[in-house]
Each structure stands twice: as C-alpha cells, then as structure tokens.
Amino acid sequence: MTLIIIGLLWILNPDENDFSAYVAVRMQEKLSLSSSLNPNQNELLLEGIEKFSKGLNNSISHKENYVLCSVHELRIGNQRYRYFGIAKTFIPLDEKNSQ
Image 1: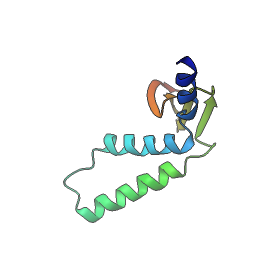
Image 2: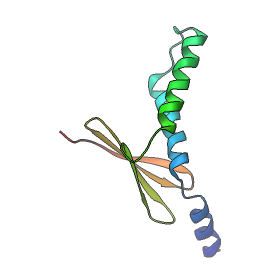
Image 3: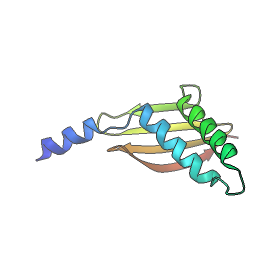
Image 4: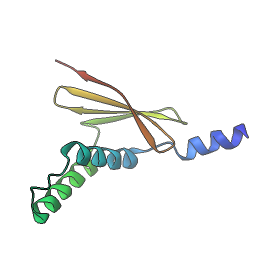
C-alpha cells in the first residue's frame, strides 16, 4: 500500500504546466472578472491571463523538485510567492516582499 501511495505521489507531482494553469486560475479569481466588462473585453482579458501564465519561465518562476512533491516560486516585481505542490494541488506557503 505504501508503494502505491509513493507511486501516485511521484506520478502526480505537479510540473511547470500544472503551475501555469494554477496561476491562470488564481489570477482570474483575483481579478474577479467584472460583469461590467462586455463579453469581448472579458475574452481579451482571459486571453491575456492565459498568455501570461503560459509564458512563465525561469525569469519569474522557479521549481524545487523533491520527487514526490515540489515547491514553486513566482516572483513579480518585489513580491515572491511560494506554493507547495503535491498530487496536482498547490498550497500557498508565503508571500514575501523583497524590498
């Protein structure tokens, strides 16, 4: 049973694509896509969020892989956000201002 659990955690260890998708969803939630925008504006905003999240690279994001889990870091300006990734799920760890 233990080997099955370890195997599942290894297979489900989130990768960069999973993190990009998570960031896109979180951005959409944070922006709370306003109902005051018309459908075309909402669509453009969603496209922009998707392009941004797919464009995450080593310049603003970093992954520490621990085989069964991982820690993803996102740096935007002076802010650093860290997330613990396990079983395709992300848990916010902290937010630090690097000023």
